[in-house]
Length: 244
Ligand SMILES: [Fe+2]
Ligand SMILES: [Fe+2]
Image (cartoon, rainbow, N blue to C red; front, top):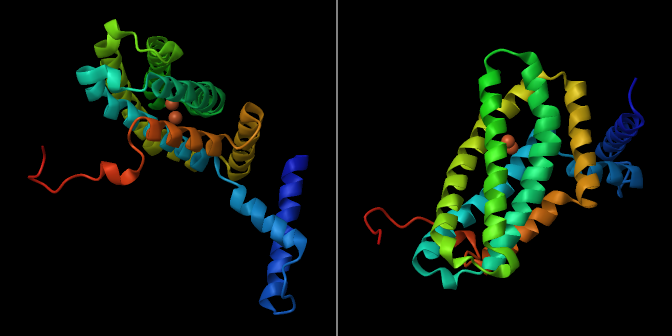
């Protein structure tokens, strides 16, 4: 039995298909509201994998910030905006740990893979352990930058913690992107996968009361500006042989 939501979605898509035929036949100049609404809905829908992978994109931008500010933290910590680091660590905690990891991966994705058994168990154990270690490091970063003040005695430890976290989580997200998420899409029956995609959108709305992804991209961009990486061009590599 389809759920009410599923039924609404199917009805909307079916209306869209009908309207599309009318447009093709040249009988309509302006798309009817149901068609326009269905197209809007379609473009807003994202699959479970697309959702999780673009969330990884936000988290990677935070990891880039961690790595980029670490040398300055070692050399001249007073130049660093501790408040911006605190804010971005808080974003990682809320968007990465409390939402992406706890609500999606640990509640839905990992249990489905674990249930299927096989060779994946060892990988899942490592991924869960890395979630745990990541939370420990985020707590440490939040403590070290509390009230926008750098705990000067620990700036080197803070820089090292940020770099090691970035190293771990880059690999973590890459393994999920290339092993776990493709497995999910390939193995899960389509109807169940579609339900999961809707469930993920519902959780996102519940958690953030709005589009969590848009909110996170905005916040990470603010932190990039505050920490001296206002645009992507700054990260373009020099020509070979022109380093330093
Ligand atoms: Fe994860
Ligand atoms: Fe993940």
